[in-house]
Length: 104
Image (cartoon, rainbow, N blue to C red; front, side, top):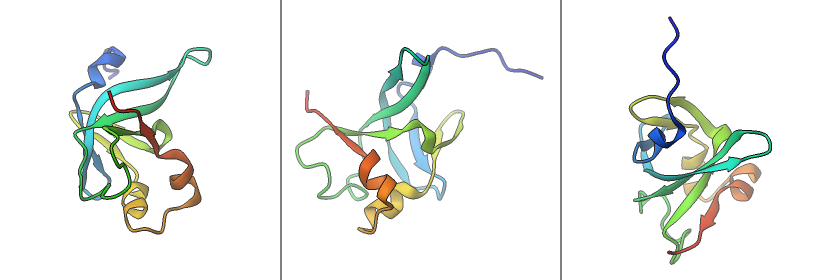
């Protein structure tokens, strides 16, 4: 049975957790590639400060690449790569893809 499509804005406000159950943040905005008509990233705020300690400085959030998303439901699950980023031994992809969003 197919579920009815949801509007992309319905993601805003959902909590994001790693696949290991660690709270990452809350979706504040969606990054889109309009030409490809695809979601490319999730802008997170209300971050887990322990997870990003010392990494976001004065920034208010981060952008997580959408390809890290494993599941979307009442919450959003992302790959545990975000935890490896926190461990100080990021995959090259993690170091390149976790972008800091500008303070508002």
